[in-house]
Image (tube, rainbow, N blue to C red):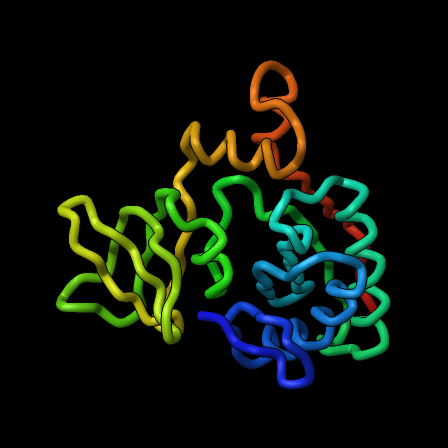
Length: 203
């Protein structure tokens, strides 16, 4: 589900075609700014929306101001590269606390937390798995199921995987961000900043 950028050590989500091309173009610039690309999607036809999901390099959530910086940087690259004919929209958001797990490093970083995963290709006749993240090994994500057994999920076969929102995950995310997990700050930590400037891209 993840891939190495050919020109750097940046680990990207596993993408193909247009999405892979866009990710490879913008990821180095995001890295220079201290961010990581978590997920990228291109949705729609008439005026496609390029959805960028990012976080800080340490895994903490980004703010609206971060979204603006990422939007400006990515938009400038895409204006020059022009990967999509005609007009397009750019939407930037934080991965959120119950974030997708799209790279091997995500499975390592969030070991010990609960997650759900769905495969494109069934494993022993099963597509959906839920349990405790145990890390990644040799191109596989490891998840410990409720019965105590471990499932080895090929990263390239994972259609989607996401952390399950728990008190432990909220507290860990709050600690990473350096804020309290209680009271108003706790509510703030649950939110995933998002920026959609509604601004068409290059025509």
